Amino acid sequence: MDIEPLNCLLPQGKDKVALMILNQPLSSMECIKILWQKAVIKVCVDGGANRLHDLAGSERERFIPDFISGDLDSAFPTVLEFYKNKGSDIIHTPDQDYTDFTKSTQLLLGKLLEKKEQVDIILAVGGLGGRFDQIMASIETLCHMQTADAPPIIVIQQNSLACLLLPGSHTLSVNTGIEKGWCGLIPIDGSCDHVTTSGLKWNLVDQRLQFGVLVSTSNTLDGSGIVHVTTDAPLLWTMGLKNAV
Ligand SMILES: Cc1ncc(C[n+]2csc(CCOP(=O)(O)OP(=O)(O)O)c2C)c(N)n1
Ligand SMILES: O=c1ccn([C@@H]2O[C@H](COP(=O)(O)O)[C@@H](O)[C@H]2O)c(=O)[nH]1
Image (cartoon, rainbow, N blue to C red; front, side, top):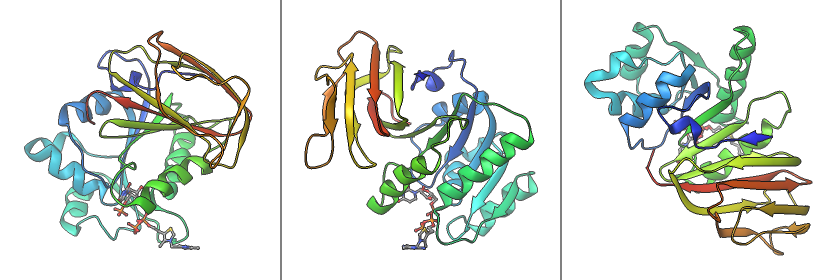
């Protein structure tokens, strides 16, 4: 698969995006504005609605999500009322076996199918900070979405990005100018027995990545602007970005 992980953050980037706002601090309204313009559907996940409401301030009427979903134990009633009156669907998903992020992603995929709308990526803002169980749960959400026909999900918070590479070969374009340089390949689903890369300072040649054996953290882009990764099992790609989202 060809992926341009940071394309969606560029004002000129052409990616069609489905935007999800999770319940974590947002840094930049400028960035939300860029994403909003590219997004064909916008979702706030439970307390993510509070984050958007706060950040948008006096401009909030221009940033109305299509729906807000979750068990709704974090979104403030006044915030839900505000968005409901402005036309957002409020979708209560009380199931307590799956996180609000997982349930909302499934709802989002259903809505895209219903609207016969295709997106290049699902971009979730948040998910990599705050509670450690929630960070791990975000990675687990990515594992739920491992179907060939689902768009890739990219999770971005502050200066970090994560996405899951499915078994196969991947070309990542990392030449937008907003890459920070650090990156990692993390075998989150057992072992990846055959991993080969190029474009990194520490490349792998048909090597095994596994916790307790070898995990590629604190790796670095080599400056060529392209990273190739071939893996026989799901592998998490993570990288840094210069501007906090
Ligand atoms: C084995 C097991 N462990 C834990 C849970 C509890 N659990 C898993 S997902 C979930 C919902 C989490 O909701 P979310 O709003 O995403 O997170 P919160 O901020 O409420 O913790 C809960 C309660 C469970 N159902 N099963
Ligand atoms: O510490 C956290 C808390 C939450 N998240 C993400 O946001 C959604 C919604 O959270 P609520 O607490 O239900 O409002 C949650 O499913 C996580 O994906 C997080 O990343 N870190």
